[in-house]
Image (cartoon, rainbow, N blue to C red):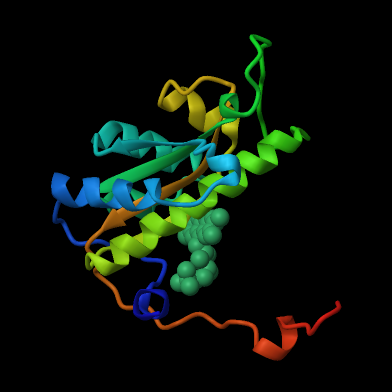
Amino acid sequence: MNEIEIRRSIRRYKDIQVNEDIQQELIKSALLAPSGDNTQPWHFIIVDDKELKSKIAKVSHNQKWMKKAPLYIVCVADIRVRIKTDEAIDLDESTGLFELKQIIRDTSIAIEHLVLEATSQGLGTCWIAWYKQNEIRPVLEIPNDKYVVGVITVGYADESPKQRPRKRMEEVIHKNKW
Ligand SMILES: Cc1cc2nc3c(=O)[nH]c(=O)nc-3n(C[C@H](O)[C@H](O)[C@H](O)COP(=O)(O)O)c2cc1C
């Protein structure tokens, strides 16, 4: 509960790198996530190259603050764990495939593991999903049958935002039936 309570979306970072052992710990935490039928559709691209980060920020609605984060973890879902034919698959935001929903669901669970482990390691993160598949994939040479579920900016926080409002329990809790 401690990491859950102290986590915030961080959009200002100190100019300090995240060492590789810690990067490995983050990925390790993601790999332990549950997934439907244990299919583990997730892949992670660790990006610390300045030019690539800049291009990712640009396709993410030009959110300039992103560029100062020392590290991005680009979290990608692979539909091939569920569709094993040779057919070409072109995924984007309008794809209605049930399997796409499944791989996004499972990869999201893994991403939140990573985010909470980062919090536990004293790091700040922010989820980014404000881009189009057809714009972000070419930047990192990701094939069209993969889906970028989120980009997580990672680094040491240079801000301490207040907790953003949350719904009250009474608004969301139901007993026995809807
Ligand atoms: C799927 C997803 C996408 C998000 N995309 C962005 C984004 O593109 N830019 C941004 O500044 N924050 C983004 N956020 C962060 C949310 O704005 C933030 O989680 C929310 O306002 C609650 O604040 P908190 O994370 O500090 O609790 C995203 C969060 C999620 C879960």
